[in-house]
Image (tube, rainbow, N blue to C red):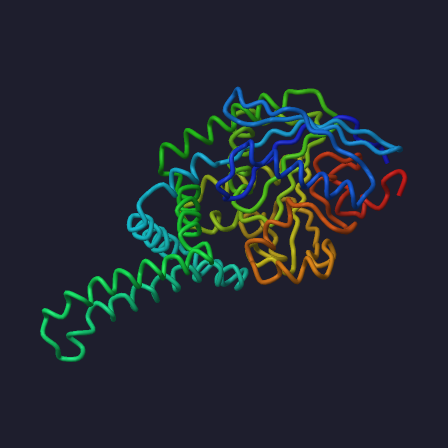
Length: 382
């Protein structure tokens, strides 16, 4: 096995309110945990934000190997902030509008057809919010229900408003408004009808192209959750403009807990589905699609390329992992009921050695394409 000495990573995070600085801090914590489990050390360089996207260097080494990696982070915090900065009433209205768009575009049917748990993930925040709105209406109209004079609404309306304020605090324990914004972005990436999103993707593509011109043994394009749709757009956009861009390079597209189909199953997502096909058919790209049994927020065991309308194209190589095998029993017990926390484990540090490790995927000596074949267990010194 030829070890990787130098790597370039293009990382597309999930839908979280984290900027490049926060992602670097997370990576540092993750690398520290991973190093403790596997017996290596990782030193991170200072962050460079000059071109609008963060990048930093990582030197990972043990007594038996040393790998230099440059991590480029294409976070979409600016879009998350834009979607989340609106007043609560506006976020609720826009969220339900996104829900309607997804249903009209066939997304709901597609979700339950391919992955019923993802279908439940889609419906959950909207059902919860509808319940809250219905209870608020019941409180507001209570005087009329009991045959009281309309003047009693002087107390029922403030009571209804107070209830809904408390309900929103309760609903945020389940990230409800955050998920409303997530579905807004899913519609935007599917329909490609918002100029600010299109311009941002073009900026990503320009910066990604520059990163891919850097010298390296391997290029890893890692993506998590919603970031997989962003990555598919960006990489597909590059291939549309320069079909030979990856020629002669060792490129791995690693989609972790991928939500590409969250957007690609919308009937309007023609551009995204076409770009998925371009990536799948690019001979220089090895697509590694990492799935987790206990993760509800992805399409478990669904062949993403075929489901996106390309059954005749080379399919992504699936790797199946278990969060339970990455953490101590006490740690897993603490997080197992938090579906978003379990979903983040793809890019967080482990307590134990397992078949998948995000730090080693992006900064370790084993070629990323071999991770699915138990390559981590073949590292020198283990």
